[in-house]
Length: 294
View 1 (cartoon, rainbow, N blue to C red):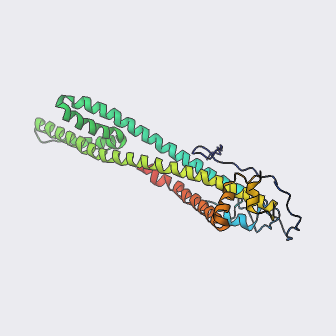
View 2: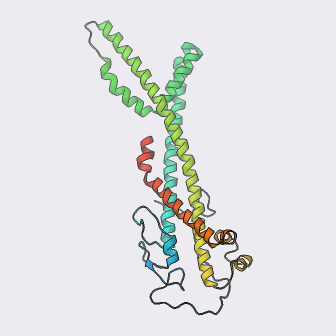
View 3: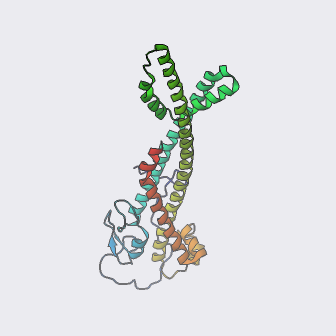
């Protein structure tokens, strides 16, 4: 998997996270005392675990919010950076799967076009209706050429029969030849229609997954930025932080807190993690479901 990362959170981009600098001078309150290491991201919070991937100490808030439910790190503690990297890799793999299906779709359509042209030329002598029928069947063959020719070639030995009369044997062989051609062409028609529907559906859904995961990655980065700014500015209310020229002025998570409250924003964050995990399962099932459909 590649680590391509671009800006703006579009289908072709993965947001990156830059730790914020303190915007306000925090009140001179004593920081809570605790024994043991502090969280790598929130240095006034005690660490409750270490990241299973890189070993960074993380606090309970980080431990609760950055997890995946599948793969090597399923159910294990992950820090923000490692969780973001895993999700970014998922987005990249979704892009790769999308590109694979798109390539198969293009090949299928090109095969249909070539087959239709050949079929129309072949059936032109039978009039318009004949040209259309041959064009349709040959388009279907072109869309599923691999399966069609595999079936047809395997049936060729059965075309040669011995009836004791060479003329009868040739006629029977030709009847089998034509019959197999039309039967396998009809089978190819259903296969090609099914493939085209699958390709279009897969590309549409995967495009949506990439968009939602990229947007959720941005929200994950905004959440980390929000928690760090709040820890650096204890005692400052959210309205003040948003109204000032601070790192949170354009922070989507902080705006969500202001609109929905802490509980509503946290629920949205949990939905992001659930989305990542759901799409991770789709990625893991791609080799079974996606490639078999081709």
